[in-house]
Length: 130
Length: 290
Image (cartoon, rainbow over all chains, first blue to last red; front, side, top):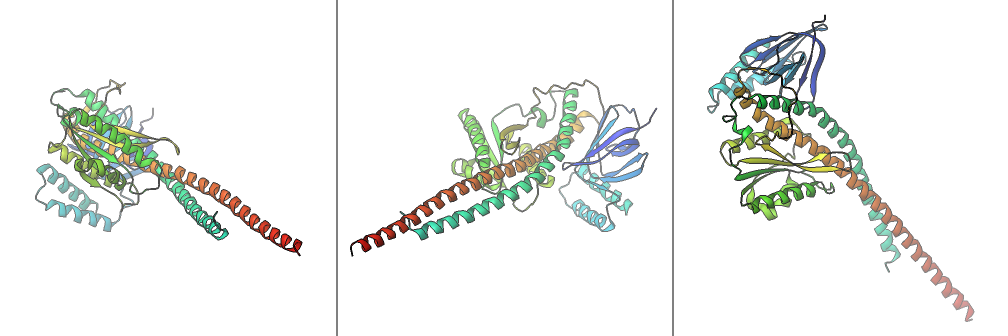
């Protein structure tokens, strides 16, 4: 029996990425990284900034996401996100830009603790890619 | 009767107008294709978002303490209406249709003695509404600079709406936009986004989900995003409708100009012929009298 499931990443503008032969997907869920295999229980969770790793028969793909929601149901994994990059397409300069932007944001006073945590998280992840 | 020269001038002027409308039609057609494409591409996101929220709101255990964005403030005193129109004119009834729909809604609300606040998106709607409802308009947002409809813009509108909601400035929020059906038909829509109106959309699956963290937290995180998503969807539909509407308006204009040129040409030829005949008669009668 096959061990694969379907995955679709959508952003508001288009269906960003989809694959039929995914073996494992690792998503940065809000309360920690979550690995999803076939026949996982139906789940809804939201994402914090991090790396989505998709292992499929045709190789590994990695994406950087800032936020979003994951829904897994009947062996269909949907990732809804408003900001996503394929790590292959992103270059060093762009990452530096993002880090700088995020750092500016951290220094703003009006952030709540949770927002601050998210931005910190984002900076960490971006640094680790770099 | 106009002189031959005047007629000639009018024909050239109508012809050049026709050229412009024809060009505008072509441009609108090209833009329409792109707008339609992005409207279609954007659909999965809003559909999926809606599904997730539907599943969540059905599964929510404590209906009384549900987030206010979902269940409302418990009263319906102040209405916020977001009227979405275009920034450019010459697109047929596109803007007036939305405004008409919005105005009938406004007068209904005011008749019921409720408060009304308006946010206009796009300058054309603002122009049409400010004469009558000028004192009700609290904000006008316009995206003249952005070339394409993008999520970032929609998010800006969404954040404004949520900010005002959290400040307790209104209880119910409705957005007005044109839904794109095809090139000649666009249906003005009024959609209530706060509180979320899920009536009539029964969820078929009774499958239970696992939530991480809990439902409330996810809902709190998701609902503001959904507002932006719905607004984005409306913006996409609107831009497709705008181009469609402009295309058919310009098509009509081109055809009318063609008819006008035909009519003027006939008149021109007729008066030229009349002048020739008149001259001939003069020559002949002159010759006869000799």
